[in-house]
Length: 102
Image 1 (cartoon, rainbow, N blue to C red):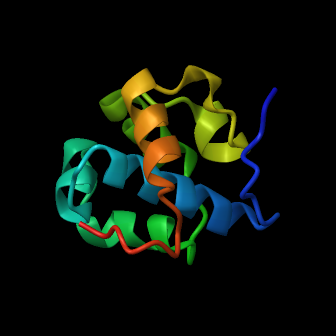
Image 2: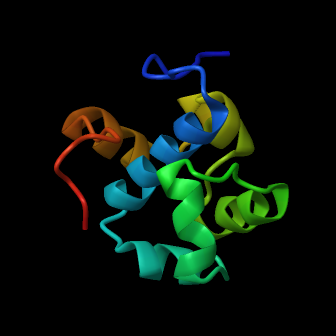
């Protein structure tokens, strides 16, 4: 399994960065991304900022809403990401410290 080369080894932070990458790749604001998965923005924000570990329940909601695998969220394996999302992340070099913040 391929893993995310940008992983820092802190699960909360790495999962949060990947959530942010997918959200930005989809061109969505945090509130819209959260609500699209049945979460409120205050519930979702700590996951994306890495201040709280993504719960399994929230991960499943996000996975179903945006067709992103749990392997991507927790392990950084991009093999099951939708092609357009993967390309946007790769081509735009979307990172946790980048300037893209819809």
